[in-house]
Image (cartoon, rainbow, N blue to C red; front, side, top):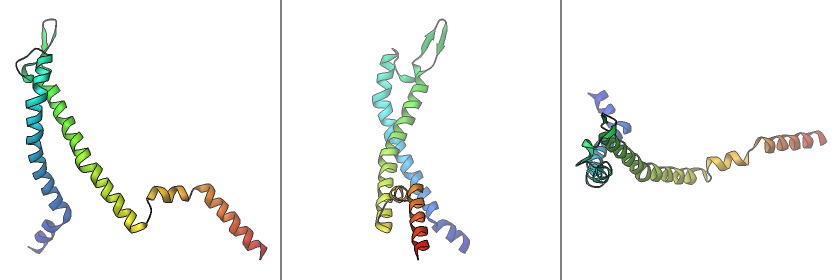
Length: 132
């Protein structure tokens, strides 16, 4: 029972559960947006009553492209919102936390210690040592 309790209380399990719950709620929002806004637009473009019946005629062949376009739009909307609502703010939070802890960004550290700068510093230290 102790092992199970440790497993459940680990941060990544709790984070995963929260992500699944938020994802389910977010799916409803995106689904309503796609069904209410984008599907009618795409259906009008393809002259169909609803997006799932939108087809592309190639001679005598009908390609049911409406459902695919709807799924692609749904995916892109989810990815867009996840990026701008979750990823970008989390990157900013992580950057600020790193700045508080270290006082500078990792890129600044790398830029400050270029290979040329290090070689010059080694040369100067060797020159100072040989003068003694």
